[in-house]
Amino acid sequence: WEPKSKTLSVYREHSNAANGLHFDSRGRLLACEGDAGRVTRTNMKTGRIEVLADSYNGFPFAAPNDLCLDDQGRIYFTSRPGVEDPTKGNVNAVYRIDPDGHVERLLAWPDIHMPNGIVISPDGKTLYLIEAHPDADRHRDIRAYDLSQDGTLSNERVLIDFYPGRSGDGMCIDSEGNLYVAAGLHKQRGTSETLDTRPGIHVISPQGKLLAFRETPVDTITNCTFGGEDGKTLYVTCGIKLLAIRTKVTGKAIR
Image 1 (cartoon, one colour):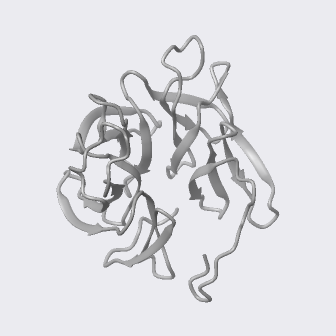
Image 2: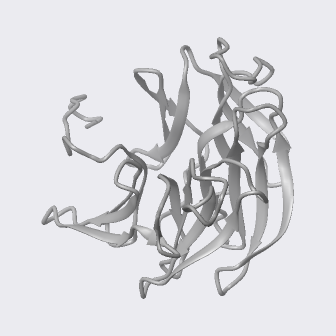
C-alpha cells in the first residue's frame, strides 16, 4: 500500500502463507512463513531471501506465526499449532533466534497454550505475548515477562484476560509502551469464544489498564502496525479491509 498515491500492489505472489512481518534496523524484511515452517529475512534491495531457522530439536517448526526483534538483533517468534507429544514433533512454543543462528526455545506447551502476537517494550525489558486458544478452558490473555540482557524470560504474569471472549491476534506497541491489540468478534464463529470481547483495537497500558478502544466494522480483525511519515498512523487488517487510524502517540522506533 502506497499512501501518497493510494495504490495497492503485490510484493510477493507466493509468500508461503507469511504472517508476522517485521523490518530490522537495516531495512530487511523478517517474515514468519507458516506453510513453509520457517523464519526468513529478505534483502529489500536485491530480493534475496535468507532462511534464518526452520527446525528445532530435529523437527520442523509447526507454523511460525508472529515475531519481534530486540536491540541486540535477536528474533523472538511464536509457532503454532503444533503437536501435543514432543516426541512426535514441535509443540506450540516461543523461540529465540540469536544473531549467530542459534535457536533457543523459551516457552512451550503445556505452560503456554496457543501463542500468537508478540512484542517487546521500548526499553527492552518486557516481552508481551498473546495467548489465543479457541478451545474452552484454554488461555486467552496477554502475558508479560521480564526480558533479561541475555534474552531469557522470567516473572510471568497475566496482564489482561479476554476469556471467554476472543483473545487478541496480532498487536503492536507505541513509543510510550502501550499495547495496541487486535481482538474480539462481531459474530461467533463455531468455537467456544463468546462475544464478550468487543471487536476492535484495545489500547492497554503496561499495567494492564484499558486506555482506549476503537471498534472495527467487520470480522475478523487480525493485526495492526504503526506507519506513516510521522509514525502516527495505525494500520489495521480487518476482514478484507485495510484501515488507517491516526494516533496521538508514535509507534515504537526500529533501532
